[in-house]
Amino acid sequence: MAGHSQFKNIMHRKGRQDAARSKLFSKLAKEVTVAAKVGGPDPDGNPRLRLAIQNAKAQSMPKDNIERAISKSQAGDADTYDDIRYEGYGPGGVAVIVEALTDNRNRTAGAVRACFSKNGGSLGETGSVSFMFDRVGEIVYPASAGDDEAVLDAAIMAGADDVSSGEDGHTIVCGFEDLGEVSGALAETLGEAESVNIVWKPQNLVPVDEEKAATLMKLMAALDDDDDVQNVFANFEIDDAVMARLTAA
Image (cartoon, one colour):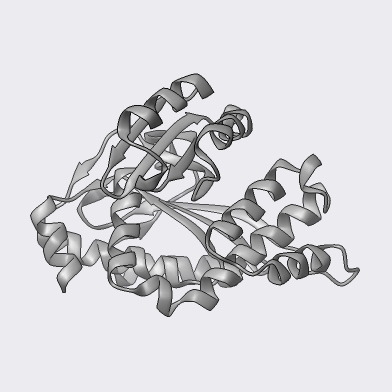
């Protein structure tokens, strides 16, 4: 997910993750609660919960917060959240997929629609852009996990389909149905991953010029800031020089 990764890198460099730490923890806790409510509180028998806990730990979420989220899922008055996917187009014809967990569909739909309309985009029907993406498993390791060759060898042995390495780290892709097995095998050789997720990987990337890129970043940030939005994926590609100027802005 070049577009998705580029956006996350910009947000990280601009310090947004530190500024929104409590918001990040809230989203992680919501996923833990929903996963535990749907599949049970035992991570050994609940793959979704196991992944949610792993990702929460990777973001340094305190153990007490994780345990509290699991306990909340088992309470009789626990909130009920729905998994919803929104699809639309951003500036420059970029396809965007938004995944949300919400206890109020009308509120979330209105908020997501407003994000698109205020930032040069338009919300479409379900299925309007998802055919341009593949549903895959994505495992991310820091650069410190090993050199490119070592990580590639480990990924091949684990049964992964693709590896992309750079200065920011290593992204390993596999079939989403194989995610548990592949991530488990990698953990034995490379240690615990930074994140393990099922994601939407674009089949092709859409080049975006600087003017549209600035507006697109505003759209992505607005969606990411919404409390109900868990993940945002897009199929954009931005020139490195333009990306550097956006990061410095």
